[in-house]
Figure (spheres, one colour):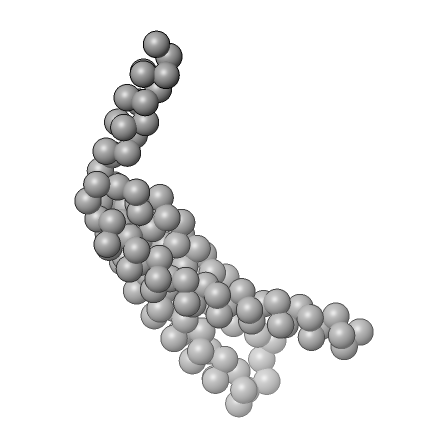
Length: 116
């Protein structure tokens, strides 16, 4: 008898509507793309000026935070009844800047380790 009730519970969980999460994830993915463009502009501006780079680190943290939030919200909204396509689009859009920023961080850390 326990298995029948567990199967019903699983079916009820799958029918949850997470359209709000999908919409927020989609909006955050475009904000993440804009913040990636802002990061690129900050990197270009830092080449011509001798600054300590605090603004770039803050921008990098914002890009990672926004895109990670969008990615994980999209992952949670992917199995919903409505908004599935929107969630998949948000995952795709936010995965690109997230991967670029993670590769940049890994390359920077490796370069710092090899310099010492």
